[in-house]
Length: 243
Image 1 (spheres, rainbow, N blue to C red):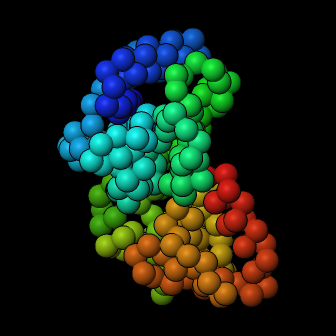
Image 2 (cartoon, rainbow, N blue to C red; image 1 turned 30 degrees about the vertical axis):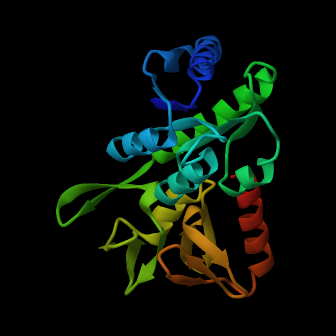
């Protein structure tokens, strides 16, 4: 697991590193052995590092020169829905904007006053990271194929075959890979929702919800069942609130 701490003050970076290491050792001792913590003095330096190798969690100062923490967070979210973001700040001024990038936590400096809340934020990050490792193990053209759940936009039935759609490609599968086979696996994951008869959507890939359809981040549109519209809307809103 890779964690970045980004702050333009050296003493804050080091204090955050020590606090994080203490929390990991106390509550996630198994994680500690495989955690790499990198420190960055600017958002620019961090973003270059993220491009080279993604991080699972970023502890991010908001008020920094040039690229501030909030702008860096928006750039991160454009790249990944799974990276954990925890903000550090001296003010609650940016609290609402922090929710817009689905931050896992928002903590006033110095860290240490809200141990329970910080531990809950870490728990949320670890749970999402575990989700990101889930895959559909399939066979395509005689070869084993692993499709990460996070890359799936939706699945449906097309021409009697299971249709698994990613951002820039789609796969068609015959038996034993049926819609029922995919539903049994995907619908156990809170990211996925059956929005129409035999259509399952990855809610992390939804851009907006319209009256009768979901518009995905790729521009694709998926219909929403009229009969189940209310239940689908509630499920989607609940997911977005707890994301």
